[in-house]
Amino acid sequence: MKIVIAGGAGYIGRALVGSLVGDGHEVVVLSRRPETVRELPARVVSWDAAFAEVDGAGAVVNVAGVPIGGPLWTRRRKEAILASRVDTTHSLVEAVKAARRPPDVFVSASGIDFAGNSGDSLVDETTPFGATFLARVCSAWEAAAVESPVRNVQVRTSLVVGPGAQAIKLMALPFRLFAGGPLGNGQQWFPWVDLDDLVRVYRAAIDDSSLDGPVNAVSPGLLRQREAAKVFGAVLHRPSLLPTPAIALRLLLGEQADLLLHGQRALTVKLDEGLFRVRDLRASLVRAL
Image (cartoon, rainbow, N blue to C red; front, side, top):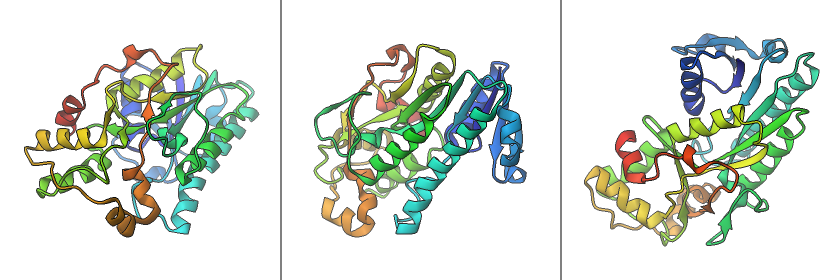
């Protein structure tokens, strides 16, 4: 099958490309700067070729978007976070609409943050959108995706744990410096997913014609942030006793502190739990770190 992937040079995209190519699929990666993409086992083309490549493809996948954990969320940065997701999705949907031979499925990334700061309430695929900035981003992102005239799946991704994951490196740093511990009161839920399991979710979204709409990509091995901090400490052989007050995180990061202080008690009622083979955060972190 020919599969077109936007964002295939990113962290999740590279893992997905490798899995698909390894199984014999023809993968085409769309890139704003194809000349800078290195070491991908796929054909990399400019976005100018998107309409031609989508026509006749079996599936289109969008995992493009600037990182949410990068620079501080200034007004301009928040605009870039939103636009890099929504505009890209709109462009791909237009290519699908224009195709003489449209793909069977359009798969788009989204985030488990769609529910906002949901406290102890269970969050599944039927939970309404929250009111936070990231929830509004997910709402607009998914609204753009459902304009696709073919079967479409939105993969609501939680924190991805895997080798080389930048977010995991940053979370591990305080522990390496003997300053790790709970964030805020540590009672917020800590939704996560192993990289290999996430790739299986994307593969299922492509292959399983019964999947449609949003799916929560979150490990069944759910735990609270305080418990996750203990796991980080154990894996790195460091203490996990030094809490970081919520007010300090707010003063330092502003609204971006939502990434650390908000959590979702998330589960999936639509995906086969057999897709999630790594349910122990410690096992996933050992491989990642």
